[in-house]
Amino acid sequence: MTIDAIGAAHPPIAPGEAVRIVSLVPSITELLCALGLAPLLVGRTGFCVHPRETLAAVPKVGGTKDVNVEKIRQLAPTHLVVNIDENDKPVVDALAAFIPHVIVTHPLAPRDNLALYRLLGGIFRAHERAETLCAEFEAEYAAFGALQPAPERRVLYCIWQDPWMTVSRDTYIARMLELIGWRQWQAASPSARYPVFTWSDNLCAEIDEVLLSTEPYRFTETHADALERQIGKPVRLVDGEMLSWYGSRAVAGLRYLRALRMEDA
Image (cartoon, rainbow, N blue to C red; front, side, top):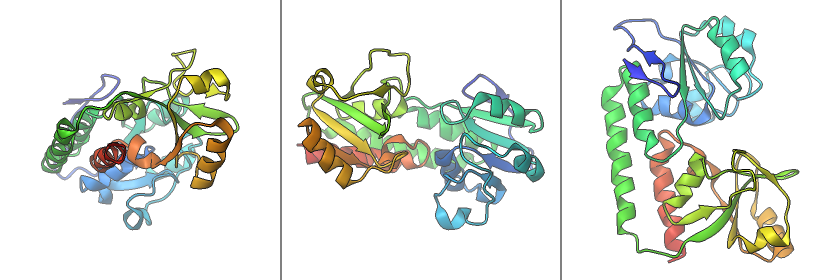
């Protein structure tokens, strides 16, 4: 038995069992493919885009929030993979009424990827590939030990505008940034995981740099240049997939983080 993020136990699939997986989490859809499980995928969200060619033939079932429940019912999945942050509980509850196995995930820190690999590898009998990913992750993670110490940098990671939104320190993104000494700004209400904020002199005084993520909002260098002129603080465009996608992409995400750190060395 393997245990998911809400403490539910999941038995490994039986040899020869007919398995049909719907994934409502883009980064985990990519992970399932990395584990060799793409042939078992029968449904994905429109945001599940990697690996593109592999997923082209897998039906879309809506977004991560606006899921088409009836379309999923018609696909007759045996397993559903969801995430606490990315999917709405009422929708997941409705799906659980007819899907036998609902696997809930919730990585909050980089090293949570190891348990995630083993969770899915254990359920779907992809142990060897899961351990290969664990070894690759551990090798990339260990490389942070060779980095020279640097002063802490206070950053504000932006995921949306109109309204402007950021992330709390209790998120995977914030804990990824901490690996290179970048401390995410904390809103007045620490319980809000994705706080809305407005630009002010007080806020700008509390940060050293702004990070504009390329997803979910598609910030560009044009946005970064305009905002830098507006607030008089350094603004950097960063790859949102590399910093927010856990799963198999986390291995490349760790390399990307080190490259960011070395740019400032």
